[in-house]
Amino acid sequence: LETMKSLLKLEKEGVTVLYIDGMPQTVPGFHRWEEREAELQSFIAQSKKRIAPWGDINRGISDTPAKRERMKRHGLDFIRRTHDEGYHYFIANLGSQVVDRWTRLGTSFKSVVIMDPQTGASGVASDIRKGNEVYLQLQPGESRILRTFTSKKIKGDLWPLFRPTSLPHQVKGEWKVDFIEGEPTLPGSFTTPILGSWTGAADPDAERFSGTARYSIEFDLPAKEADEWVLELGDVRESARVRINGEEAGILYSAPFRVEIGPFLQAGRNVLEVEVTNLSFNRIRDLDARGVEWKIFYDINFVDHLYEDYDATKWGPVASGLLGPVTLTPMKKFQPED
Image (cartoon, helix red, strand yellow):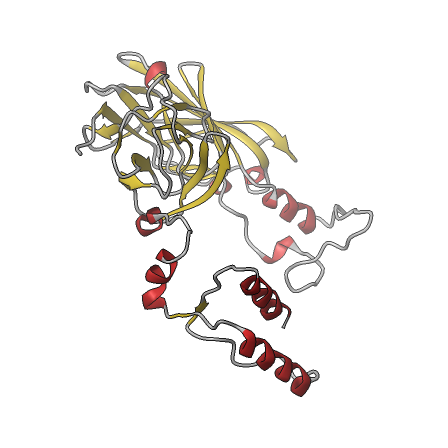
């Protein structure tokens, strides 16, 4: 009833309210049902009853002053806010497909600045065209911030566009794994040709370890011409710090676990180091298994989803570390076709 009352108030103030596939049928629950049902029917009688079946929703929206965003068709989600000279867009690819295409915005602009919230990189979009379109490239899980300018032409470093020139090269060889920080005990170092969860290591301390391990390997840079190289770590549990030849190349905390590393590479032999930090679950599981009291809180009971005493020993250890595969892909700059 409160929702319907608020919608009716909006209608009376001149707001267009579209009811998808019809008006409400009845009130929820049986408390004071007859009284509340009569009140609902009174609200419905006063409503303008703008019914919008799903098939006609686009036509219904086009009759309102709302700015339509077609990027939703391509699997992109967004938040749009105004600023003094245009709009800010936060755009995320929450789908499973790569977005690599011209994308139309619902607002007009003369220039756009593109920003990567994970790396801090930014640049002016060199590729825009009439119809309020900007060229976007987003891997599944990636996001961008766009700052549009309605009437100003912005100058600055351009945002580069890259395409792979060949299939990814898998980084293979002997990985050295060193546990460098964490609790309760640092497991022993080991080497492996195959990446996987460190909980499967021979050292029993690895199964209960919560902290950071360093994965290091030497590899030869493929003899390929490239404007940039992209390193992809594959499956990471849960965050990673990447160093190439001793230089920090990036910190990755969400999918996709990929980073551009071209400036850090050298011809021939290179050294890759990936410091991976896991979740605390395996440590908590060990505490519960040994009966160590760790649920010490001032004003809350620590319970599971069934509101029973939390016991992590009910589950097995969670995967931890660098699971891969780790690949390296040569990239070339390109200009999209109109």
